[in-house]
Length: 128
Image (cartoon, rainbow, N blue to C red; front, side):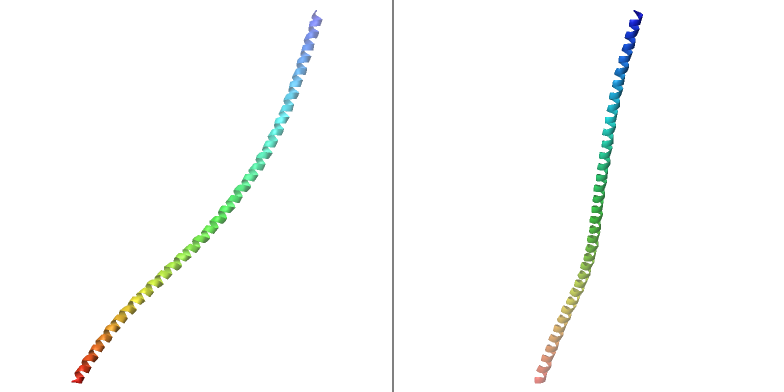
């Protein structure tokens, strides 16, 4: 009876070994599948990060060119502002000259009126 029992134990162990080997192979296959999935995911991440970086670089270049354009507009605006100030100064000078001319004209008219009055006085006294 002992020999039969011993044979049964050995056959159980062999079955256990086979079962373990099957499980180990299945785990190794699953491990390989996971490694492949991870490798593909890493490639996707690498591709995406490259795309994102390129996109960010392009946006940065756009911002730089817009900033440059804005600076140019700022310079143009400052120049126009300075031109405007210069024109305002010229206008103020012309206004001043205009006022002075009007004053001279008024003085001249007054002077002419005095001379006419004096001439009238002289001619009336000369008539007598």
